[in-house]
Image (cartoon, rainbow, N blue to C red; front, side):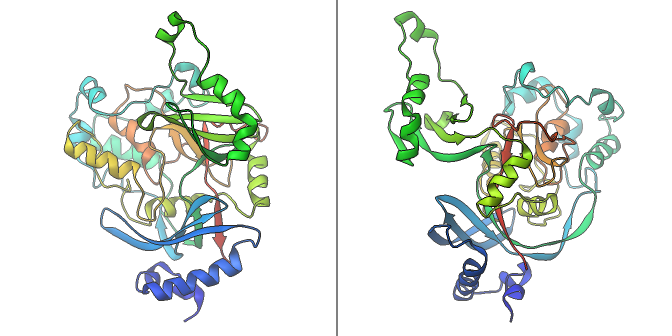
Length: 368
């Protein structure tokens, strides 16, 4: 059996570990650039909502990637409206109570993209009926289609646009773990931002900033639960410049078809984790949130904060979304997390893709 037949999704699931390892060795030989350092290879089991995949997690130049098998006849897009969702969640909930039970974005009006104003458009949808909700869903998801998806090495975690990950700095000890030499260039400036000299009165009201951007130098993002910051180098760029830069490294962005397959694994569900939308503050709600924020069936982690877009190869097609406001209908709040959601957001040719608003995910396409 030829290599490209073995890495077909239907066949890949039948291979034993030895056969999968042999396939991977050939793929690494032919498709990974020679200058790229491979520092870790591990067979890992992933599962989400009954879909299982045993595949490889590898480290390329210090960044985690997962291998996703090909699918010659992937069914993508959505035209089933609210089918599979829970009608009582869509039609019978209290907005004020919902705000207490679900995570909420903290975007200010100044941060909201002024071009993403669809109030007149949304008024045309009757979100008080299942029919109206179904029409809304179909209008905001990509069309039903069949696509051929090549095998891919896809970055496990998306990065803020224009950045490269350097490491983690502890806000308690100030210790840094990661690429020490690159961090040393920015260390003094970063410490000044995170550990400023304050008077006693100033220290009472000071708090760690959520993000810190020094253009063309570094970018920081606070991780609340871990009391640390992710540290990135930063270079201002447009969509085209970003794509050209990663192509020089041997990578590319995903197409819309590739993104949808990588996120949803071709499952015919609107949401990769299942049909639950109303996330209550109980054990069931916590389990759903863990499914949403954890690795998917191919091992990718998808941002669920709804405060950034994820870029694809096409600047006219961005996945995910920036949440417009908090007091919207449940389906409006949750649909941006759908595998097939279309944001209708356009990145202009000359537009700078800011790390606070955009994510990107590197990939290596396995194709002849």
